[in-house]
Length: 472
Image 1 (cartoon, rainbow, N blue to C red):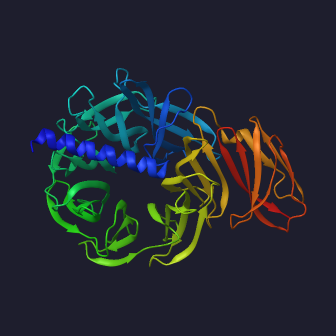
Image 2: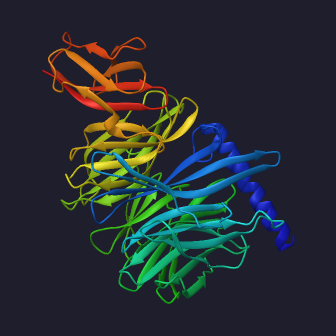
């Protein structure tokens, strides 16, 4: 089979796989929807803590321009919010003359400037060639430079790492062989090192994450198919000059997939996915554990008390819906506490976790509600207890638009909101519905409920707001 036909076949196979996954899950990244008049989907990328304490949430937006033929504009956006989750900025990160076909996978901040790594698809080419692309925007959100790092092919970015303020390292996949790519760029975006890595003989090698192990050594992690029916985890250690130090295929007990890689407090590292696996610097297994509390681990960070917290999602209700999960582990991998956040009948997929200045945490991902995929933010305290959760339409919502009072309460609860309240639901901490209201009522009497903590859910037209309340 020729290289061109092979590329088309692989692209076709991936599109079919995405379509089937979208139909099965009905809310995965890639699901078609109508949002306003033209928005097709909003996909969270990651969350970043800026220098002045504002939280920067990167996401991509896709606008359906035409259905015959299908034309979709895809471009990154930046959402800035303060500690109260009040939206300060929601802006596209695009160049003045951009053709909008940029699918960003990683957003970073360097000296007040915004770095985006992703891919650009050229729909004018017969095979829809895709190029690994890195862009920098200034503090006023203007494009400073953009670099197309690789010749047109079928490139994909998995992760990016900033080292000091001098160099950016990008890991991805490219070439007709789907070999992992490793790229080093200086502060102007000029390529210093480019390496196409001759990885293990795994079909469909997909790069999912990268970390810096030492000053000059990086670890790239991903998954791929050794057999038709199973996925296998792999890692590649590479130095800053692009020289491969070792490769390992790490799947030990059946099939597995990778969602990311995290450096431990020592020289070990963790692979996230359907299990959490810990390995030595050289890829020797230390532990391999499946946590029923976590489900699929999507994000893991170190905490201020030298433990770890893991954010993920798991399917519930016979895989009809999915919930965010949030679990704290000690340095040996033992569960300290674990929570899952039930968003009624929605399908929720966590993308990123960050620790906030009050030692609580912010969980960032997506949710489907009323046939729309929206951004979802959940704020929890230092013990993982829900503070509040809200779906976000970045163009419209500031969290300060809604308040629930008094809290604590001895009986009556009132909801102040500029939007119509369609329903109020009270849950106990196990997720069981205790009480609900009829449409249009912004008051609820819970005086007969036992003194305890509860979750109040306020359902509006385009969003859901949840908050923890105390009944005295």
